[in-house]
Image (cartoon, rainbow, N blue to C red; front, top):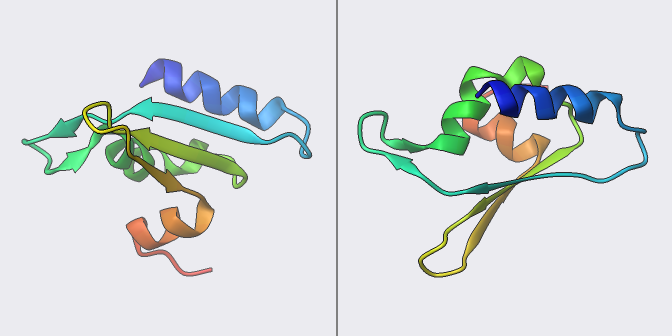
Length: 80
């Protein structure tokens, strides 16, 4: 998680016009009943710049889930 937080810091420093993608290989935690990416989003929401797009990649079938700020608000059940 420390490296992911460092990436979010660099995203904060990047120019606003740049696209910011964070690509993660999907890993599901039976203990938490959620993916590693969803756990990160819930735990470190305050570190995440509003323009980052997260990609959760499923290696076994090549599918992806994409999360932007609106998806993240739904995951966390946040209001504007």
